[in-house]
Image 1 (cartoon, one colour):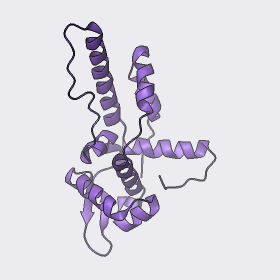
Image 2: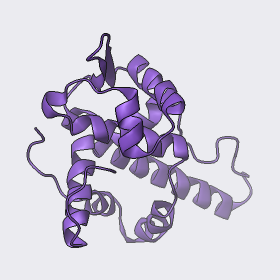
Image 3: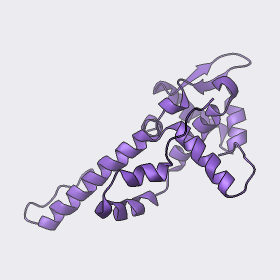
Length: 177
């Protein structure tokens, strides 16, 4: 199923930045995913847990992950268009991953469902204000590091982080994300 374990996601992100950026990134890391992004990640994690990555019905995923089925169907269609999942017709059909979990990044999932992490899209720095340029430059650098981290975190990494967290909390391993 899922292969060798890479370093924890948090460690990966924090190793990408220097000390001055780390403080700001800790604040950025406290941001929450939108419901759209959260449900998309949960759905693909659920698919990654299927034996042989076989097809799973929308109803089954929705029931296990507590996601409204019609909303989930729309997200899965978007992810199919992006090449992250395949749809299989028939009584035993449903959705399945289009490639191995280690080959699907968090950034790809977010991009597939139209989520963006673009900073200050309509902001231009005032040429006379040095601090404005410094701030804009800092946010551009942080954006680049965050983007690298999101595209560097795979579905496989998320799976192992969830399992590690459950074990650390003394919880029985549950495949509900």
